[in-house]
Amino acid sequence: MAGSALAPSSCHRGTPDQSTNPAGTARGCRNAAITNVLATEIAAATLAEADKHCFPGWWGTDALDPDLSRSLLFMVANQFPSAGLLADDAMGFIGGLVQVLKRRHYKPGVGTHVDVSND
Image (cartoon, rainbow, N blue to C red; front, side, top):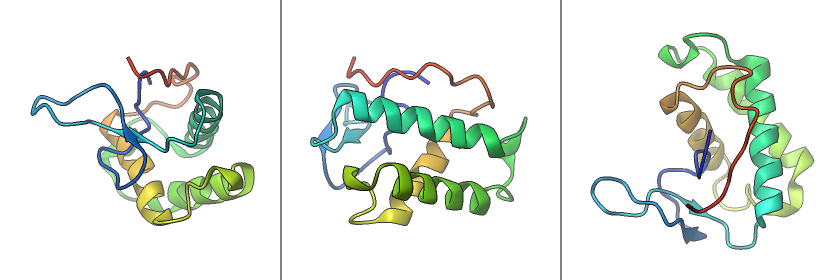
């Protein structure tokens, strides 16, 4: 997953990234208080958590969503409590992560390289 692949498609806080969708609007956003190093750590931890739950074709079913969402919520809360990612809309943020993984058809073990640069 490259670029801002884990950023939600829209958000109410943070700063828009530099990329745009075909309509020309901002495609993602980042909490301005999160450094690139921390964003990389969070993205890598998210992919490691997804690797534990995802299987080929998982994005075609909703059966995995509750377990993956719960694991991501606990991971963010326990490993990155000071990042402030769960302060406003925790389940919205976690749901956004799951939806991005689904849209990208995330395959376990493939997302070992994380690039959070703002192309």
